[in-house]
Amino acid sequence: MAEQPEIGGREPIVVEVVTGESYWWCRCGRSMSQPFCDGSHEGHGFEPLEWKATRNRPMQFLHLQAHEVAAVLRRQP
Image (cartoon, rainbow, N blue to C red; front, side, top):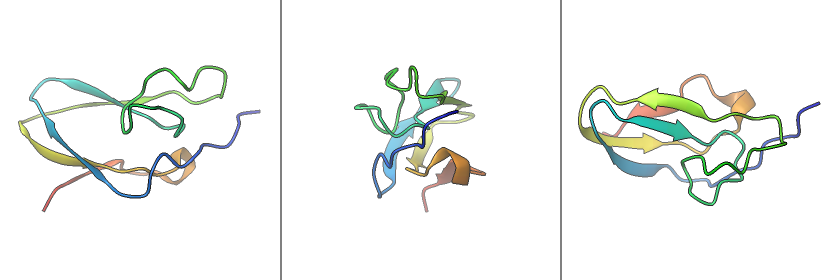
């Protein structure tokens, strides 16, 4: 049985994403490189979620628990 995810933070983190780059979003909440995966999920039953940028722009990466996430990214207003 998978462990429960931790809350990696409560505020969105703005990141300037680059077209064509893959970003691996932490779904376990344990990464010290929030909002991105650093491998801390090993043995906890969670895998990071890959997202590929389609254009250069600022994005907000959200800290939500994996079981609550339908969409993990939204465009910064």
